[in-house]
Length: 318
Image 1 (tube, rainbow, N blue to C red):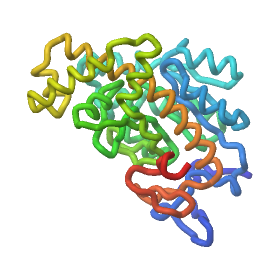
Image 2 (cartoon, rainbow, N blue to C red):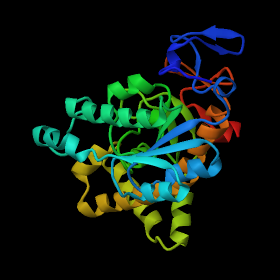
Image 3 (cartoon, rainbow, N blue to C red):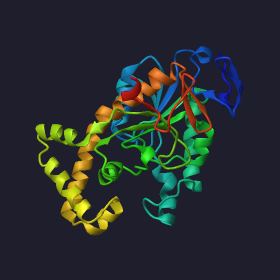
Image 4 (cartoon, helix red, strand yellow):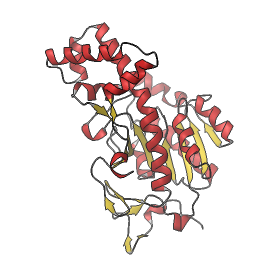
């Protein structure tokens, strides 16, 4: 079946309900477009999320893009014999970094827009059309408003924290926020990318990972001192009425901050295995590819059931 350049502008049918752009739309319709999706995975590092997505169901049409030529994800793509494009962001953002400073390049600056438009052109030229789904699978660049407008709601990202609680930020920072807020467990969140920072509508959240239990398990494997370190961090936070990481940075010494980084980095690794690697393949293959997911504005539906703000939680449904 021939597909338009942007099928989401067409009228779609969900059950007996005929809908248009402003109403419920299936993220992917297997009845209309077939059982094999074209999935583009954006990778910047090890590529393990991409690896796990493919492992769940290797029969889809996979394509890999990386902004870091030669990264670990490239090696996995070669092993899988998947087509890929390598295009470094560095030449495109070099002048912007001079202008704004390293790590300060705006999300929607002209240089980033030029880069993303070239990325999109290369991918769509290779595919002959737009992808059915884009999985940001360890991709370390912001996506601009232009990219969101082009692909929403077909672009996914995973995050090591509960985004509905405002636990945003890079790397292990969301886990530090959860600890300082007094949470006893952490979750991974799989969301549809929007124009904010980790603010997109949530599709799936992982089962809760108990923080203390996870640290004890890590200690049994030789990563010692984590439980004691957690007690020191939380006791300090309580005694100084600290509830945010910014406040911790201003009042804690280097040793305590290093301990917090070690704890959260270890938890992030554990959550990746028990969270990210479960919910990303599940969302792609068990939900989206089967035609179970629809979106209306910022509301997610699974089998026509409106999901709560935190989405489909594995411990509640699966």
